[in-house]
Amino acid sequence: MRLRLCLILSLLLIGSAHAGTVLSVPPERPERDRTYVFYLHGRIVEDRGVRPVDTRFGLYDYPAILDALSARGATVVSSQRPHDADVNESAGRVVAQIEGLLRAGVPEQRIVVVGFSKGGMIATHVSSFLRRPGVRYVLLAACWDRQDEPQLRLTGRVLAMRETSDDLAGKSCRSLAERSERPVSFEELSLSTGKSHGAFYLPRREWLEPALDWIHAPAQAPRDAGS
Image (cartoon, rainbow, N blue to C red; front, top):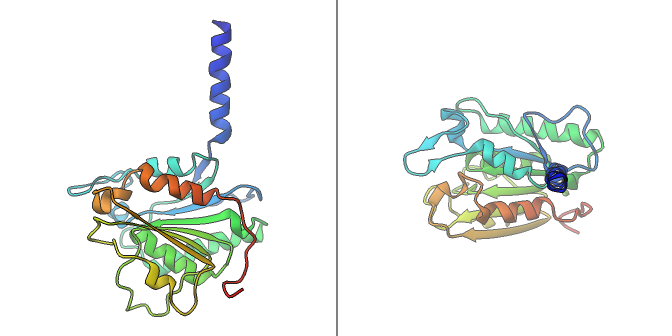
């Protein structure tokens, strides 16, 4: 009995050692060797709360996604945006938070921005505004017709994911990545879950595992996109 109790306690300690933290804003005194993930949710959370249900796509489990993104030890920073939040203003707030981490000594390559749908649009604006080559991005269902924003550019290291059955935001981000100013690196994955836009409503392994692998890949020193 005693041995069994010790084993259970050991497993709990191992699990807690790898668990991350979820915060609404970055910490005042960030740890320089920790990875910080900014998650930017979809529009539905602005309108219907943190666990909304869409008649077509089902439950959007925002809290579960945050917990899943922190599972390998990252500090996840995310907060619910107000109704009809402005994309540029939202991106500006994230840029200011990232700049605060950088001033505190957190390396660029320890910062990742993950955005889904409208949150992905905001993430592309963060990338365009921030222009830090070491910062990484995960864009989930984030690209559609952007001809009305010719000034938008992707910078840093970008992983994009699209769902082939998504008729709302299933376009490739490659055309955005191939504009005159290009990101340091760009990769794109096509998923075929059959869940349409709802593929990213839950922490499904199809997108979560590649995202976590990207977030926790060995850090690379930043370099200029043209080098």
